[in-house]
Each structure stands twice: as C-alpha cells, then as structure tokens.
Length: 326
Image (cartoon, rainbow, N blue to C red; front, side, top):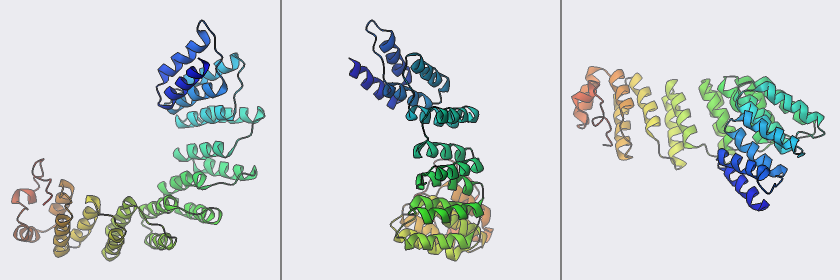
C-alpha cells in the first residue's frame, strides 16, 4: 500500500494534478492506517506545486515534513528556490539559500542553474552573473546550461559587449552548440550588428553547425531591414541549401526590402517563387506591397500576375480574398 501511494502521488504530481496528489498525501497521514511519506514523496508534491506557482501550499507541505520529522534534502530546497524565483519572490528564494547553507547542505550545479536561470529570466543579469562566479568559487565548473539563460538575457537587452565577453568565455570552457550560436546571432540581429552576424554564421558553419529556420529568418529580416539585400539573398541560398523551405516571414522581409527600393522585378520574382513553393500570399505581404509600390508598379502587378485583383491592390484583404496559395 505504501508503494502504491508513493507511485500514485509521484505520477499525479508529474502531470501537475496537484489537488488529487495533495488529497492522497493527506489520506496517507490521516487515514485509518497511518503511512509516513518519505522525502521523495514530499518532494514530488512540492515540485508539482512549485511548477504551477502554488507556493503557499508548497511551503505548507514543507512545514508538514518538518512536523512529521522528515528532513528536507537538497532537492527540496532546489524545488522551493526555483518556485519562488519563478513567481519573482526573490526575498523568499534568498532566505532559502541562506537556510540551505546553514543546514549543512551545499548547493550543487543544479542549484546554481536554477538561480542563474531565474535571475536571467527577470533580466537581473548582474545577480545571475554573480552566481556564475560564486559557482566557480565553490569548485563547480559552469556548463552551457548555466551560460545560455544569462547570454539570452544580455542579448535581449542589447548588452552585446557583455554578451560577447560571456560568449568568448563559453567558447573557452565549453563546446558551443546551435543554441549558443543562435542566441548570440539573435542578439546581434536585434542590435543590427551586421559584421558580428556574418562572423558568427561563418564560425557556426565552420564548427559543422547549421542555424535553424527561425534563426535564418531573423538574419534575413535584419539584412533586408538594413537594405543589404545582396547579403539577405546569400543567407536565403544558405537556408535552402541546408534543406529549409523559406516561410512567409522570410518572403515578407525580402518583399518589404525590395519594395522599399522600388525593385518591382525582384518583388515579382519573389511572388513567383512563393507560388512555386506553395507559400500563401497573406494579408501582411499584400499590405507591404500596397504600401510600398507606386500606382505604375501596381498596374504592372495586375498585368503580370492575373490572380492579383484591383480589390487586393486597393487594400481589401478580407478573409476569403487574401489567402492566396497561387
């Protein structure tokens, strides 16, 4: 019966059915035959509650553990610290960190991963970086999983100098993967750092790594926005050579770029390519064309592309009209 309860509680907690898991936990300790849950069972419940942000209940379960003489282990602290950071209760998380230190337990690599990830998601990069240093001071070497959240936070905030320093440190200490390069490329694209993007792509391909379709799309969008359409086309060729089919976002970026330059022939080529690849011509792209082209260019579209109606070019892109797969 004891094993059955433990298995059921762990299973329910794993799929976040926490009301049922809590009911079984209470049944264990309040039933006709009292069964004492072990630390694994308590941790299963605490972990589930923390994942869905029910921190008040998670603390109550922890108090229940103490009342029944079950000692918290490192996993208990890790769950609670991560849970409080997830709901931005920093003081409670730090209180638990202090308690962890005085309990005779030592933070492990996973504890630091939770802290770095939690503060990075709140964009508190200084605190996250401090825990990265503390980790090293305690003889634990950071891995990519520790670096990536901090790198992402720096890139998202446009802190590209700091991100570059961190990225170089990662390169020395770890084997960089697609996620590391993609994170850095996204940040460089957001900052419009063309030279950096080109170098990162070169380095990435040199390591035998390939950007994913989202990363390719972001790179093409950046070059198109900066009117470097030649480079955007180069990246498009790399993208297709890598086996990715350009989606509507890629075509929208390029059409927007060529429309702004008044290069109607390139716009026509891209629309024809969309047709060949069976990519829908949606309202966003039509709006781009309508806003960017002169009346003479619109007339040319009508002549060359018969499925373009006058209604579309006047901006009427209501459902049923604009989703053209051509």
